[in-house]
Length: 240
Image 1 (tube, rainbow, N blue to C red):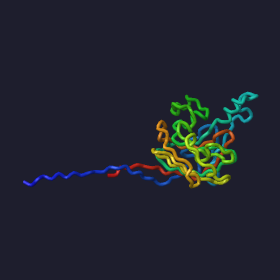
Image 2: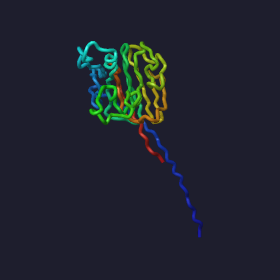
Image 3: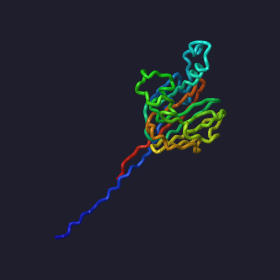
Image 4: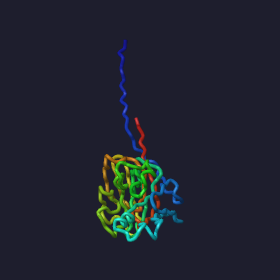
């Protein structure tokens, strides 16, 4: 009787990341796929540029009573407005081109499950699905990648991962179109401005790894221009 030979087959299983094709996140025609959050107006210009402006429903009496206290003024001044994607995203590469007018302050939000609920003056009863344990801004619920006019320098310049990693100064070109690229992975976040490395952060383990993408109008006097907003999602496939 011939001996029985047992053949052991070793199967190697690995997870492969596959970058999908780039696709437009903003179609250059309308706001399909986006949600306006707060008091603001977003317009699509004839050349496909997205213009974000603040709207003031009561321009003659924004504080309800005069004279206004400093507290009333600052509460009005720093109430934010945003434009968010309807969809949420896991791992992705994001490309955005933008112009920051003088003294403007904006940003790009990722992984913010609140969709700016707490900074636009929205009642909890209006959107109970957006109420998070931390009642704060997108920069603290998720992450905000800073966009700011560099003529008013501060700690977190354009390309910074706000409150975590400051970017070097002078990466942004004044009065010109700039590009920002954000790599969002479960292992961390990496940012480049005009093709130059700006910031990198492993992430806060207490924060969500997924969420929508948002464009910020920081205060009542901010406006901003965006174009060529596109995304490349990263999928994972199991190979043997």
